[in-house]
Image (cartoon, rainbow, N blue to C red; front, side, top):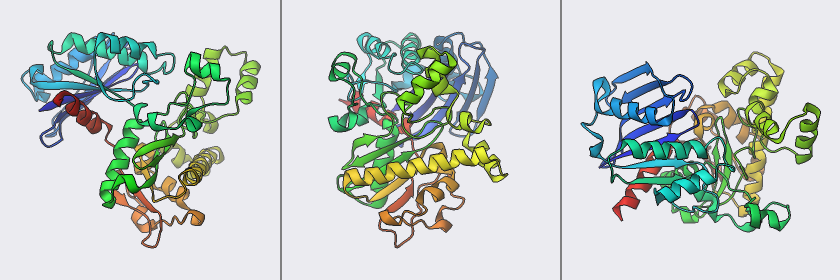
Length: 399
């Protein structure tokens, strides 16, 4: 059985086609620069590739090209879209409406679009992609939506509520939602399997670190707290996002610059973080290179990120009254061994001790990197959100 997994952004459409008999990747690719000029890169599981500039005025044209590269030319892997059993979509924000994976209907798409105010960069493009997909895939092919926020619906009110008047929660649904839930759910389960333990018996801090980063306390397989909040802006410092900031600093800076609320939101989401502090780049690889060559502001970015991750690990260990494992995942978490080393340094109070020889140079591989005498295990666990989406989609349509 073949499942197509789609992850749509405002100007991109990433996809993977998986064979669920062995969970192998048949093909994957990315249609990007949608609404600008358009470009596609595609690769098959057996190593064939294709890349070209295209005209992508909307997500519909991107889907049409996606179908074309899957069914014809040098990257053909299927004869027609009728071979695809279902399509699974990643959705960033499900609010408090969606707590689990569900099938796509026109009503579901409208509700996802209606949550765009909570995730303006993501949810409207998701809705556009869902509608575009309906136009392209054969009628009757089921579509499923998997929500990043769903995993965090197990947080208790004491974790997800803000200290604003309760009416703001009841009327406007202002609360912590959390993000990267699909990734945190996948890696925490994968870690439990690697450790040979039942996830119900584990207390895990999951560090998903990338251009966007979030830290989650996973107790007994459930999210009980997470660093991202009402939007993905909250938490640790990120590529272009501020992370947590005193609200009074926000209003102060907005007044000094004469920013409207939207302009201030853009300032904090797109011009801050690694980019804003370093003045160099939003990419951690560039930051690390600059820091290694003596750039003090680049080093400051690294120091800030490491410091904030440490604080979350410590606070979540306190909340869970213990800690069995810390895991690193995401682009930075899986590849930046210097960040992992710095985070785990001087963590004796939590009984965390790194095996530097196991950690040094490790990139993108499942591995235990804690020392044999470390009471808390430390692991690198590559994430695979697409596989989890495919699994959820398969489980749903199998019912």
